[in-house]
Image (tube, rainbow, N blue to C red; front, side):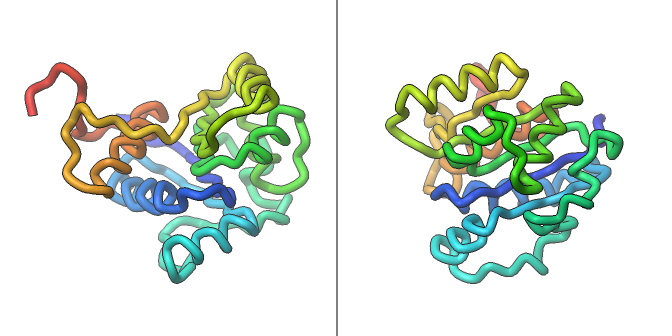
Length: 189
């Protein structure tokens, strides 16, 4: 079983519940996580509070870095992180990463992950898409990133909103290489 160093970036796109569920699921996979660093954009903090109520980062059992902390280990390739998941990922953040603009810790960490040829997963939350978004997705895919739109699946017959959202979170974590019981197409339930 893997044990990886992972970065979770959370931006101000609607869908803070995806980030919350992702962090909760990572807690249950702690035997597969050797280290986890989390960075919220300033807008992510506001959206989290607006959509989910209280923003209480002290309840997150992972190391949280401020978006202006360029001395954080996640800002350097020498720290050896394996995977970065940005969930949810705004189109603005995606555009800055695609353009190589590292104006905060979140975009710098993504730049480092790409240059080190590690796994970058962008969980986008925007629709419809314009041509700039599509071109940025193409550019990032060519650079090695995985674009993973927050599009839930329904073939597992999820029974409620959280179960529907969990189909996305499970898919993200499987893309990242985590192993855990979840629905797989073609298997009996």
